[in-house]
Image (cartoon, rainbow, N blue to C red; front, side, top):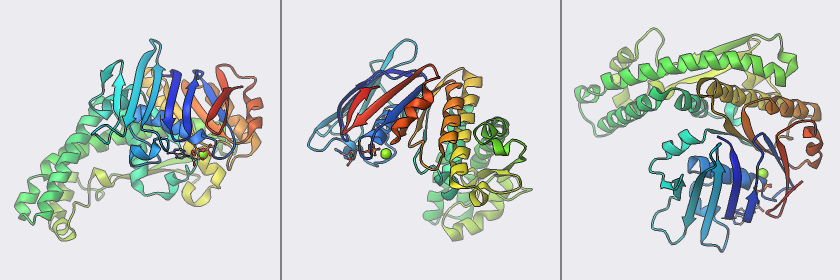
Amino acid sequence: MALSQLTIESFRNLSQVSLAPSQGINLILGPNGSGKTSLLEAIHLLALGRSFRARNIKHTLQHDENRLRIIALSGDNNTPIGLEYSTSSSSSSPEIRLNHQPVKRLSELAAYLPLQLIPANCHQFFEQGPRYRRQLLDWSLFHVEPKFHLHWQHYRRALQQRNAAIRQHQTENEVSTWNSHLAEHGEAIHQLRQQQLSQLKNNFQRTFPLLCPEFKEAKYELRYRTGWAKNQSLAEALTANTTRDIALGYTRQGAHAADWMFRVNDHNPAESFSRGQQKLFSLALRISQAQLLFEKNARPSILLLDDLSSELDPSHQQTVLNVIAKLPLQTFITSTDLSLKHKIKHLTNTAVFHVEQGEFTTL
Ligand SMILES: Nc1ncnc2c1ncn2[C@@H]1O[C@H](COP(=O)(O)OP(=O)(O)O)[C@@H](O)[C@H]1O
Ligand SMILES: [Mg+2]
């Protein structure tokens, strides 16, 4: 679901921006502090209802302004999506409209506009805890497996209830009443994750060597931890650990404790890859996810790539652009390197924007 027209008002240093993005690659070039990441942030906010830099939307409002607006036309029918936040509104959340109708749940919006962000510090995939990697995996599942969201909602609610029972010092029997519900949905989540990871690995081992040819003959291996003890069902694990959970004060094992990684040539990329290779690894993962989504739903997605040039030499930057150009993806790629525009000259469906102090010009 590509964006064909984008208008931004009073968002960070972007007072008034109006762009006609291409359906393929959009390069956003400009010096430090010009507003490149702010543009990506505005698109992210519109697609997901939240920023990736500010917890509270009020911090993204331009200083000394009282209303921000982000409006886009999307898809083949030019469906409008609009977001507005004003300091005078009683709510701390923005008002969002999809095709003129108020959006009641952010999951509705997220399902409509599948979007992935590769932040400038994309190494956090390796450095951060399992939560980040679970979220990345669950992004795919949310978009390609309709059942996933339901299982996840049930699971989360049961987990909250069980943890509340533990905190309220309820008896072991009372805490255990949540076990079967938790186990049922946790096992379902595990099954879906396992399937998804094996498909993701197939795509990944095809895509990563395109970006990083030195890994063409490499061996790829999935490491997946369910979140509970091996050789036990989740129901067994919960039963066996109820006393310990009560002592700990929370439910330790379950689908909320899962983790995964692709090992390459028997090594964990977190320990053996250079920063540049880690960046290409993250990119290949995101691309693989977008491909899965397209294979299942025939829906193109949006990829925001903040700062292509850092950690990558010119030849790898070129490779990345060539690979991305062939995919069913609308991408917004930022860089401080103005010469990048020469690297997409031979490609079709591209646009180049220059930004300086929040002012965009089309090159
Ligand atoms: N709420 C705000 N109002 C006005 N300007 C802001 C606000 N928040 C950040 N800025 C400024 O916006 C500019 C653009 O930031 P950013 O988009 O991160 O730049 P870059 O092009 O380096 O990615 C910075 O100079 C920053 O100080
Ligand atoms: Mg930036």
